[in-house]
Length: 179
Image (cartoon, rainbow, N blue to C red):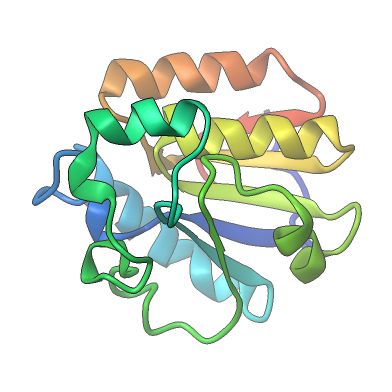
């Protein structure tokens, strides 16, 4: 497959945060590999990069009550170091979209990238926040490219299953190995 034209695309760096590194119950095994691959993409998207952060809500509601009952360590304020971006992403200039939901497509991200952008998704976790962002954006008519080598899942198998699910949404979602 030929790599899509990303001349005007936005690089979305999803949830490259301390909470997903090896020191956490939410550790993502391929985090360092994905981080290195994303860092290589950054120069190609100068001025068109947005980072996202997942944080706990102040007061969980609905099904989130049960979720945080299972993961009480994560019920900390959004300025807790647990939710800090890791390097090199913390040092970048530019917008950061913070959300209490897995999916990051919504009015805050749309305000940064425009109504019908081309998004190049990277980050963690492929089988959660990347998948949720990709499907919501595609459903809204956004062109989505997912860079597999710049994502990591809860496990390699979960990463591959999520990529396979996103491939089902072609041509709205395109999965490429690298860019």
